[in-house]
Length: 279
Image (cartoon, helix red, strand yellow):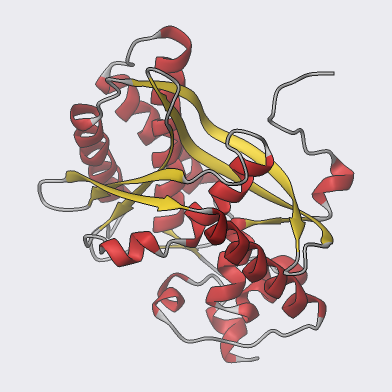
C-alpha cells in the first residue's frame, strides 16, 4: 500500500464529499448553492472573473510544478502565452454568455491584465529557503461534527502551494489570489479557506493534530502597475475545530433544505440572477 498521504477520490466517495468552494457558496448564498449543486442548473451567464482566475491559477501551477520537477523557471513569454491560450480557449468554449467588468471590458483587456499580473508574479516570486512539496495538491479527509462523530462526508480541497523550509522544519501553505483592493490583516486571519487547508493537512499527516499551521496569502493586485503583496497568518487546532463545526452546520442546512437568497457583493458575479429574481 502506498504511503503517499494524498488520497485518491473514487466515484463512490465523490458522491459523499463536500468541497471548500461548496461551503463558501452555501455561506455566501444558500439559494445559489441549491441552483448550482442541488438542481444542477445550467448557468445563465459566466463572469470573466471566474475564467480569468482559473487561467491564472493554471499558469501559476505550471510555474511551480516546473520548479519542483526540473528546478528551473519557465520563460516569462511561455508562461504568459500559456495563460492567454487557456483563457481564450475557455472563452471560445463557453456555452453561456460572458459578462465583463469595468477593468476588463473585453477579452483582449483581460488577456493584457493577466499577462501583466503574471509578469509581476514572475519578477516577485522568491523561493529561496523553501522546498516545493506540491502545487495544486488535492486532499480529502473525513468530516466530523461538533461532537466528534463522522458526518459520513469527506472534505475535499486543492491547495495552491505547499512549501517546506530548507530544514523541513516549517510547513507553509500558500494561497494565491488576484484582487483590486488590498487585504486587511483581519480578513486574512479570518479566512475560512486557510482553516480548511489546516484541517486537510492535519488529517493527512502533513502536520500533527496539535500543530499550528503557517499560512501565506500571495495577492496580485490589479493596478495600473500591478504589485504582489504577502500576508501571513496561522491556523491552530481550535481553528480546525471551528471549521469542522461550520462545515457540519452547512451539511445540516443542506439536509434540512434551508435555501434562501442573501443579497451581497457576491451577487454581481452570480450566474443565476434571473432564477433568483423569480424564486
